[in-house]
Amino acid sequence: MIVATLRYFGGLLLVVKYSQDPTDFFIFQVLVGVVETLMFAVRAYQQMPTPHWLTGFNWQMVKPIIPFAASMSGTSILWIVLTQMDKVLLSELLPLDEYGYFSLVALITTGIMMLTNPLIQTLLPRMTVLIAEGRRDDMHGLFLAAHRFVCTFLFPLAGLIALHAEPMIYAWTGDHAAAHWSRSILLWYALGSAIMAVSAFQFYLQYAYGQMRLHVWYSVISAVITVPVMFLAIRFYGAFGAAMAWFILRLVSFAIWPAIVHQRLAPGIHGQWLRDIGRISLMTAAGLAISEPVFRFIANDNRLNIFLGLAISGLITLLLVAASYKPLVLKIYVLFSKPST
Image (cartoon, rainbow, N blue to C red; front, side):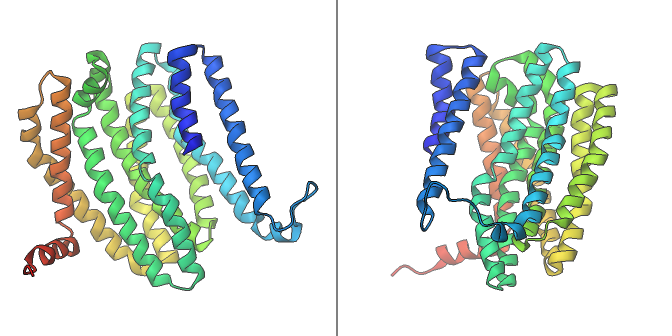
């Protein structure tokens, strides 16, 4: 928390009070990175049983995990290619003002994918421990519950952003030109990013089992397909082509890949996984349709009213999705139907 505060709020203070030079900003970020590395190094050194300055590493202990570490490193590089190549290609194609608008879209969609990070940081260790203890059924139950929880929040959020992309950008920036340019781009990027965030659960399952071979092949095949498709889409259709290609690639992958992973590692969970996806998707669409008149009634040219309309519309959709989950409804019913004592 200290490092994150220093990195983001310290960087903001630097830009606001002292220097707007990009070089100074990135030098500051490098220094924060050095401080973070030293903090971890000191803490790791303190955790060693008998540390001394010449402490090295035990090759025999490191050797068995090299394949796993190599696969993680390789797939991380491919992940960077898959998620950043559209930005690189569009930086050479779009005028500076339009690339600024695209950066807004990229910031929002990246935020959608990052929302799951706090949950995943606690989920992965727990899933791994359950597998190590031989409690596969418990791990599968945890996996499905976490997946259901994430979908319950992400699908309404992404649907709301996609449906109201233009007013949301305007409420955020106060720039009609940015809002108008971004509306069709953000729509497809928001939906694709939500699918990508949910698709990452297939990686979490493989990680818990310590079997990364499928993920390596998936990453390689995705890169081989995505790179030429994105290049051609951007070459002929610009930013809109990038958005459509991003969404279609993510949707096709989501329709095919989870079934393969589940069949290989946990065949018993796929039916429940499909039912959760279908129920949440259907109720999200219904919630957005029901809440649309409410948004139109509240929202106007006032940016605060737009935010208020988005918040209420999103809350209605979220409540409808949550209410469609029968165990949750039964728990609430039991809670409120108990006689008072």
